[in-house]
Length: 115
Image (tube, rainbow, N blue to C red; front, top):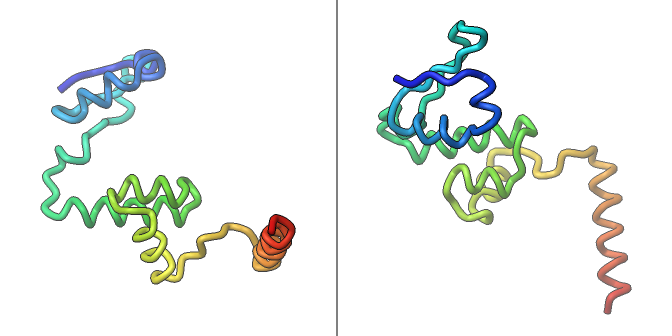
């Protein structure tokens, strides 16, 4: 087990993440344990690819990451991630339906003008 304080974590997070791949990392805040970093592979999850995919979907649905980042988290091609999100009924566009129509109209006008 390793310990890092908040200042160390802020100044060089890659060290803590690298250590978390092999061992638990306890984040200390004013000499008090505040959080624990654990590498996802270290959890010993039998079906890690499906867990990665579920994590990616949840983060995308919550608006925390883009579809491209979700594909990288899930370790699948972007087209496959877009298909899965669509099949699950998760909107790929975060705006209102009216905004989406406006965006499509603008894209159609741009395409027409570029010909």
